[in-house]
Image (cartoon, rainbow over all chains, first blue to last red; front, side, top):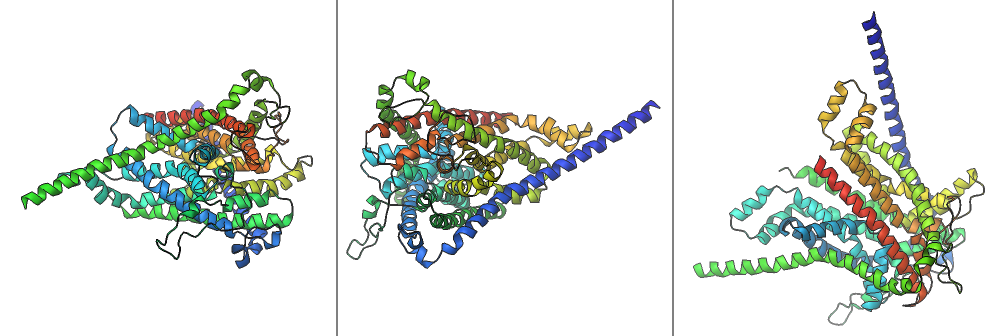
Length: 308
Length: 301
C-alpha cells in the first residue's frame, strides 16, 4: 500500500516538473522573441521616420539650418577619413600586440600585467578615450580638434578588440603547425609570417570588421574632443594634382561624423530635424549591422572550412 | 653556395631580431594607452582637486562647478549614474539570465546558433541610435502609462540601456553555463530532477563565477554608457533617487560641458577630467573584479 502511494507521489512530481519545464521553455522563447523584437522595432522605427529623407540630395548636401535642405555629406566624408586613421593605427598595432602576446611573450609577471591591462582597457568607458584625446592629442601634441586626434582616439578605443581577436584565432592553430615549421629550420617570425598569420587571417579579419563597426558608431569620444560644430565644408582632398599627388593636410582639418551629426539633429526641437536624425540613424544602423552580419558569416565560414 | 646560405641565415636572424622588437612594441602600446588615460586624468584634474576641498565633494548637495557660486557635491552626479544603472540592471539581469538559461539548457543547437549572434547585435547598435529611440519613441510610450513623466527621464534611458547590456549577460552567461560538465547534469537527471531544476540547482551554481563576471562587466558598461543618458535622461545634475525624474550622470555631465566652449585650463575643462577620474576609478574596480571572476571560472572548469 505504502509503495503504491509512493509511486503515485513520484509520478505526480515528475509530471509537475515536466509542466514546469514546458512553461519555462515557452517563457524563454517568448522573451527571446521579445528581445529580438526590440531590434526589429528599432529598425522599423528608423525606416518609417527616416527612409523618405534619404535621397541623393541628402547624401550630397552639407548640414543646414533648414531641416529640409540639410544633408550628411560632411558627416560621411568625416566618418570615412576617421576610419582611415583608426584602421591604420588599430590594425597593425593590434595584430602586432596579439602576435607578441600569443607567440613570443614569456610567461612572467610583466606579461600577466599586460593581459590584465588589456582586459581592463576593453572595459574602459569610451568617453574616457575622448578625455585622453582631449588632454593628450588635442592640447599636448597640438593636433587640434582634428581628424587625426579623433581617429587616434577611436584607434585606441578599438585596439583591445583587434588584440583579442588576433590572439583567439592564433590560439586555435595547433602547435604541430609551429613545430613543423621549426623542424624545417624556420625562425619564429618565419613560422608566424608564412604559416600562422595565413591560417588566422579569417579570424583577424572578423575582429577587424567588428572593431571598425564599433568605431563608426562611437560618438562620445568625438564630442569630448569638441567635434560637435557646424561643419559645412570638406577637408582638403587626400589626392592632389601636383606631385607628390598625396596630401596629408586633411589629417589636421576639423570634422564632423555621422553619429555626431545624428546627435546634433536629435537634440534639436522640431519634427523635421528628427526625421533627419532618423535618416542618419538608419544609415548608421545599416552600416554597423551589415558589418556585424559580414563578421558573423565570415566567422562561420572560417570555422567550417578549417579542420585541423 | 655555402657562403650564400650563411648570409641568408644571418639575414633571417636580423629579421627575427627586428620583428621581435616591433611586435614587443605593439604589446607595450596597450600599456601606453592605459598610462595615457591615467596620466591625462590625473594631471588635468589635479588643479580641480587641489582647489576643491574633499569635504565639499562629499557634503555639498548640488553639482554646479561652472556657476558663479559653485557647488561641488559629486553625489548629485553619482545619484544619476546609480539610478540609471540600477534601472538597466533590473532589465538586463533577470532577462539576460533567463535567456542564458534558455539558450544553454532548453534551446536546440540550431536555434542557439542562430539566436546568439542576433542577440549580440543588440550591443552593436550605435548608442546614439539607442538614445534617439529612448527619447523619441520609448518616452512618449511611457507617458501614456505615466502621464507625469517628464520629457527627459532616467527611467526611459535606464530601460534602453538595460536592453543594450542584455547581450553581455546572456553571451558570457551562456558560455559559462555550457562549460559546466555534462556529467553533473546527468547525475541530477538520474536523481529525477527536471530540466529547470537541473539548470537552477546544478548548472547555475556551477557557472556562478562566470555569471557573476557577466553581471559585473554589464554594470561596468552601464556606468560608463554616455550617449543614451546624455540624450534621454537629461543634462541637469540633480540629487534624486527617483527614476521618474530627470538627472545627469557622471558621463552626461562630461558631454554637457564638452558641448560648450571649453578653453584649455578653465574650471569647466578641469571639472570634466575630475568627473572622468571618478568614472575611471569606478569602472576600473568593476573591470578588475570581472576579470578575476572570469579567471577563477576558467581555472575551476
